[in-house]
Image (tube, rainbow, N blue to C red):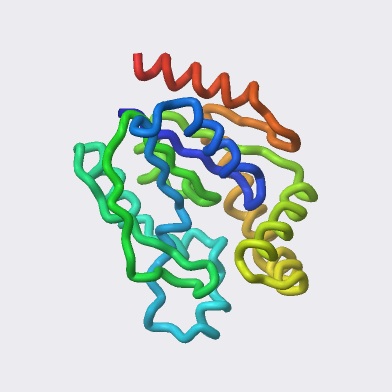
Length: 202
């Protein structure tokens, strides 16, 4: 088994790279785990209180549960991965049975900030992208897929996303074994990553 950590700023293209990687292998050989599934359970808070949470801060992530699940997968055990709702800003209470596989991809903006999680990755990848491009992608995604409005996304970007990226995310680039620029479609970077994975799997 090989565990791959893919990090980078919001809207950098992590999901696109992950999807490309998944297509490189047969279905049963790759398992994807999203950091978003591991936002802390905030069921004790009202919806209004949950909307004020800084979800781009490392403290918003249940790293203990993520670490526990990664260790269980390494041990060959199936986990119950939480399901998160972006519209409700909380876990749904449902879980997804996730089985161990040949390649496990963990993706998220904050996964390289925690030493205990970093040490579980066999390969650490940082997806690098221009800040303007990331903002445009975030606007399109949040309005189309997450029920946000333009002003809400722009305000969150200025007050939370940008400062958190500068404080916590950009600096994790130093931990990356591979840096892939994604201002445009980058199939070469994915092919290089595939080669590295295959070499490590032997």
